[in-house]
Amino acid sequence: MTIAKQTVLKSFAAVVHDHGRCVTTALAKAETACATAGKRLTPLRRRVLELVWGSHLPVKAYDLLAILGREREQAAPPTVYRALDFLQQVGLVHRIASLNAFVGCGEPLQGHVSQFLICTQCGTVAELANLGLSTSISASAEALGFQATRQTIEVEGICKHCRKRGAQAVQ
Amino acid sequence: MTIAKQTVLKSFAAVVHDHGRCVTTALAKAETACATAGKRLTPLRRRVLELVWGSHLPVKAYDLLAILGREREQAAPPTVYRALDFLQQVGLVHRIASLNAFVGCGEPLQGHVSQFLICTQCGTVAELANLGLSTSISASAEALGFQATRQTIEVEGICKHCRKRGAQAVQ
DNA sequence: CCACTAAGGTTACTCAATAACAAATTGTTG
DNA sequence: CAACAATTTGTTATTGAGTAACCTTAGTGG
Image (cartoon, rainbow over all chains, first blue to last red; front, top):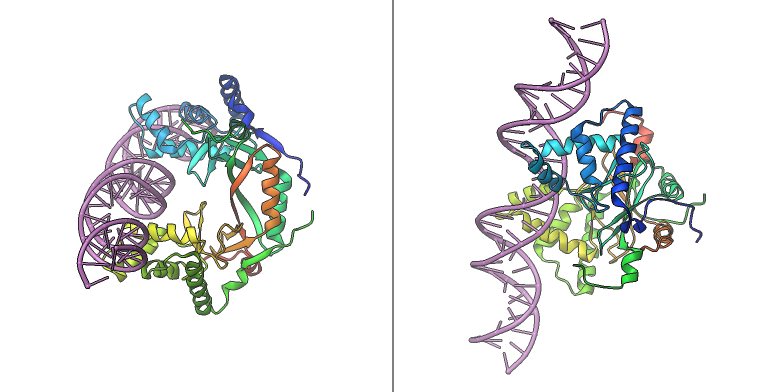
């Protein structure tokens, strides 16, 4: 089987990298994306986005809540969920349904297709934008008369790095 | 793009059908599957499976809990979650991550691949077992050095029947 | 300056899921 | 059959996920 050309938005190679720069870039792109869309990237929203980008690990809503609660005196669930909803709408973060968690999106293009590779060893999530795959899925559905509007594609497994390192215990 | 051969385990055509027979068959298969696997399909587990098969709509854990609570005097979350965990292990039910809900599986073969089509209009879920699609996804991951072990493929959209009926309001 | 809208604060709740331990049931073996 | 082991279920309690409803504050446009 031939593998369709695919864009790797965020790869596992990113495990070892200049993450500070990674975050800075993401925030800069976010500013632009919001400005273009006529949406406001408020301090709170910006901060939540920054926290999501704290690593390439998926972040849980209540973890964000705990951090915000330390920084500001007021932080309740709606605080973080509203910010996350906004960021999702603008396409700045994605929700990983199988984990109930969130990851930043490196290519904030509203409505772009995406698939996620989740390493069960190190927890890192990589985002793909394999249009061929997405089209193939829609086509399979269409063959049954089903008109697809949204796809949730999440793959669990072992990433390149963890495979190289072998089956070591996770610290 | 050519569409791979796919098996429709449970189709939207099933919306209008003899559902009583559908459930009976599922329970019979479950008995066999458990017997083969050397697992015990206890009355509780059997009842939960029956409730999940109550319709082709995904069922929420707390709805099951409410029903069980009416039938028996004792029913707490672990009661239903333990039964659901068991049924998932044996492959008799699937969890739909994007809905936090459960559906019965017509082909209880442990570890078989599956994809779900979720109609946002009528709520019905159809299960596919498109091996080609599954292989294609694994191959895309493998091309990045990622060894896939589990896939979550959930597609939202409008099913054949709802398309025919047009964009009517849902009662 | 006033009305309007968007954003965030606040309270309170429902649903999802699990931990930990106790009781009961079933299976097994001498 | 009695005794023990393993599995299943009951019970209590808690954490985590997500939302509803209402109120206050901050920007925006006439």
